[in-house]
Amino acid sequence: MQAEAIPKPDGKVAGARLIQALGTVRHVWSRATRLVLDVALPTLCVACREPVAGEGLCPQCWSQLSFIAPPYCDKLGIPFVYDPGPGILSMQAIADPPAYSRARAAVRYDEVAKTLVHALKFHDRTDLAPTMGRWMAHAGQPLLRDADLLVPVPLHWRRSFSRRYNQSGALARVIGRQTGVPVAIEALRRVRPTAHQIGLSRSERAANVQGAFKVPPDRKAEVQGRRVVLVDDVLTSGATVDACARALLRAKARSVDVLVFARVVEMLKSPI
Image 1: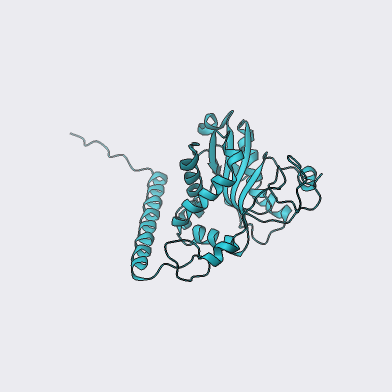
Image 2 (image 1 turned 30 degrees about the vertical axis):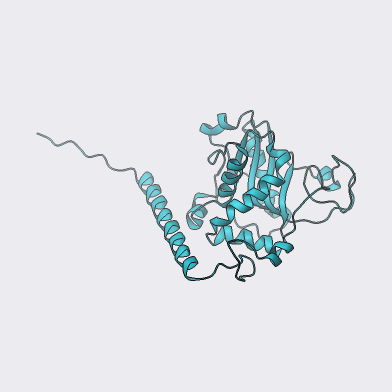
């Protein structure tokens, strides 16, 4: 009797599963190592490394964190020097309007905020996500009030493997738990790798991410007709979130707003 042929495993599927398993092992090992160190050593301020009671920032670094509050440009969320009245747009927003409707940020991207972002992004400090996400939920109340869906800015799978997790996804999950707005982790994909934006001009940043994002065909129903809030850690030139917003709008999203933890701020002096 002839033995039945054993089907060969799909190489791509097996490879993806191996990558996922290795990433999980690395993440668990990193967290276990950090737990051991937390027991053996005093907790340090994430910004200045001074001992603190609990986790997070010491009082001095906390006082240096610059939260963004009105008055600001209604579209870009960048603070004005003085209050021009409600609903006022900046000259920048009028001259070069983004694809998204509104952007809001919790804090300015100063040295303390940069340290927090880098700790979450590159050093496995996922314990910072709950606090950062709560600040974002507070800053984004006008956007989240009517939101149907939270969509984090995705990483390319190669970068996701090297970092082990997507910091924007971690922040989106916290905001979702705070507000009850559903989170769609897979609604947007980065379909090609892009170079780091650091050091690029505004036009180079835009060219770098052009066509890099796409809503997969099997996720378009998730996006169509929805009021989407796009979640990311930092907004600098806005090129990345603008490219993401365009992809979501092509998939028939009703509207796209942007909520980030920190943004680069140049004080606006000339609202219209």
